[in-house]
Image 1: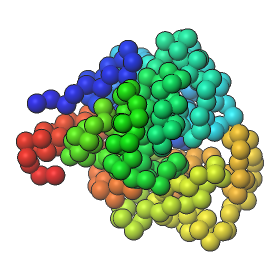
Image 2: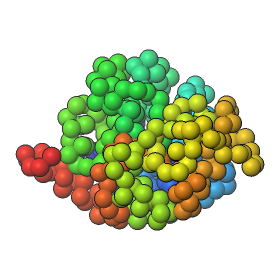
Image 3: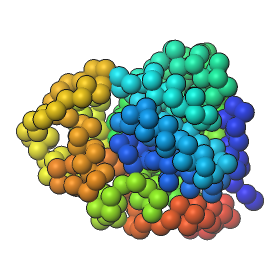
Length: 320
C-alpha cells in the first residue's frame, strides 16, 4: 500500500503531509521547498515578515521546486491583507490562515484561483468556512504548538468536524511519526499538518540552539504560556516561560504594532525572533506537546522517507 495523496481544491500533493507554517522565520523557503519537493505541501510562515521578504521567500521556493507551496498567515496580524495579496501575486498554491477569521480572504483567493484553508477549532467555524468557499480546513487540536484555539484534543475534535463539512479535513496536533499519521488518517482525516517535527530538520530556519531544545525536551518541559495575542501558547520551558508564569513580563523596548489587538504584556515577535536566532534563554521556543518524542535533526528527505516507512510498518501491523 501507499500513502494516499492529498487534494486541496485543484492542487494535489503526492503525500498527505502538510508542513506547518511556523513563525517567526522558522518555516521559510528552504524548508517549504524541501517538503514540497519530497511530495508534501510546503508552507512558508508569512507572519512576522515584510511584504518584500515574503515575496522573496515565495520566489526562492518556487525556483527550488515544482511541488505544492503555500503560506500561513495569522489573521491577527495588522499586515494580514497585504501579505495575503503578496502571496497571491507571487502565485502560491495555498493560503492557510488561523488566529482569527477573515471573510474577505475567501474572496481574494477565489478570484485569484488560490486555495484558501482556514484553521478551525470548532464545528461552527468549520461550517462557516465551507459556506464561504474554503477548499479544506485544518482542525488543530490542543496538542499543537504555538497559539492554541481550543482545549480539545485533535482526535476528539476531528470526528465532529468531519461530520460537519464535506470538504477535506487536515488534522494537526501531536503528529510526529508515520504511526501517528496512520491513526489520524484512519480516523477520517484527508491529511495531517506537522509543525514541530519539521522545526527540528536541517532545512528549518530555526537556530541550532532552537533545534537542540526540541531534541533535549522531556514531557515535563512542554508548558503553556501567556501570549499577548490573547490565546495561550505552548512552548518549551526556559527562563523566559518561568518569568511569564510568575507575571514578570519583559519590558517592551520597541513596539512595531504587529498585531491588530495586543495585550502588550511583552513583545512576542521579539521573543520569537530571539529564539529563532539562537537565544533560547530570553527567546520563546514554541513547540507541540509531542516535541519530547523528537530525538534528532534529520534532513527533510530523510524525515519524509522515515514517515512513509513508519506508516508502512504500522499499516502492516508492525510497531506503533
